[in-house]
Image 1 (cartoon, rainbow, N blue to C red):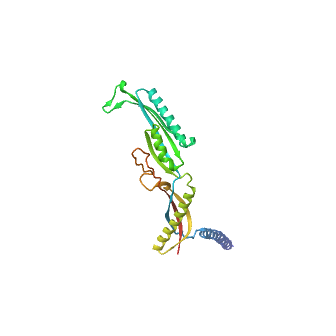
Image 2: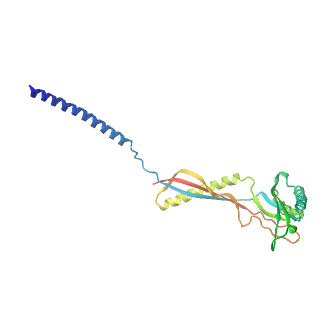
Image 3: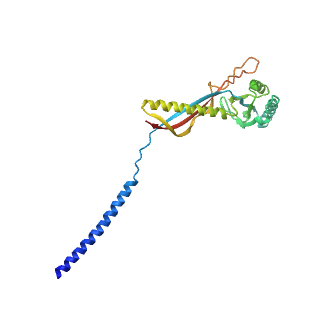
Length: 255
């Protein structure tokens, strides 16, 4: 009787153990299978990144000059008065030559004491006061650049800090340079791909190179060639400007 009871307890315990263990193993197996099914299987895409450059040459259509008057006198009042007189004459001259008032802008005004001479510091009685006034002038008729500079000198200007030739609206030139840069990038990418036995696929990204061109540059060291002639206005040559645009392009590589 007692042995039958023990036998039944053993059978019940064994059954419960099999049920619980089976449930646990089944759940674990399902969890492992689910995790394995979620693991990514895609391969990393192969790419190539190149820089393409586009260069266009354009004719400038405006000039910008910085013209100044520098006066030194024994007192501030004398220097300021004489400077104002000459600058007024200069401004009148520029307007008479057809320069629009909106194209004339004061770019600098300075007053300071010259307390040093060739031998070092000077006494207070020898101090000279310097007044400088400069204006930036936009000259829209390039045929008048030389005339404007010559007339400014005759009006009393004694500082011309430089002449710069510009393109007022560079939208079309930039678009053309970008187009050429895209073509250059495509050619560069195809050449590099050919070296390694692959082909160039679709474009994945494209961006302008910051600081890599994007501005106009003269074809020579100076944008203006000034040659002082005897008794005449300085000859001016506008020349051409070149615009450089650079694009960084990433392509997908395919077999």
